[in-house]
Amino acid sequence: MFNLDNYINPSKGQEASHKGIPMEYRYHPDVLKAKGKGRIRYRGPRYDAMRLSTLMEDAKSFSIYPNSINRHADYWKEHKKQLGL
Image (tube, rainbow, N blue to C red):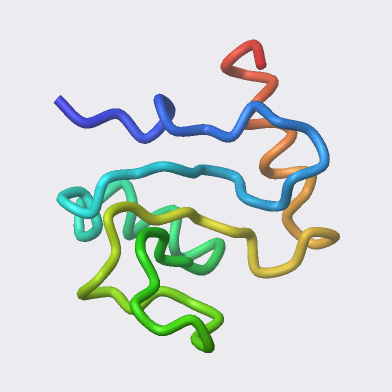
């Protein structure tokens, strides 16, 4: 069973709120709800050295980033606090 909280980024100083989420969960309702508060960045191999980002079809996983660190920082801090991180 998928639990988005298993992918919370515990590292301080990084912008991603969740990272390393497998692509099979891209359209899971919990991910879609979290995406409403942020943006998705795809992770995986880049087949063109000049490309700065990974395309969705090439991605192995993805990360969720808040829209604005200042605007949503309190939300993510509270969310991590609830989980004891």
